[in-house]
Length: 142
Image (cartoon, rainbow, N blue to C red):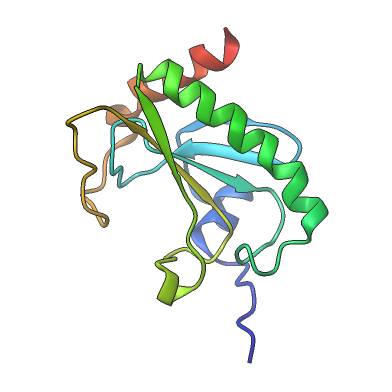
């Protein structure tokens, strides 16, 4: 049996305004916000504004519309966080490491000699995330 999309997942709730996020970017197809359990300073998530469990069930034309947002946000994360590079991660199904079953891309700023923190916490407050968000938003506006 193929797993189905759960409309009550946390990212769907964020899209409906039922859960908060520290938003850095939004357009007609995507929303980007900071991860509340960042593995790196400025760790940003980009999600589609439509129901897609993961890469396996998104129509190719919808994925094609989403990817420019992923690229745009990745460029802004690198610039805004003054990172040397970025890692972009995308996980599919539980065995593949996916924890939230709404398609999403992790954008992790990277610096030489700085390790990525392990997944799973600790949670960061919106106040702690805000300076990173402001830097990324400024880079998007530049």
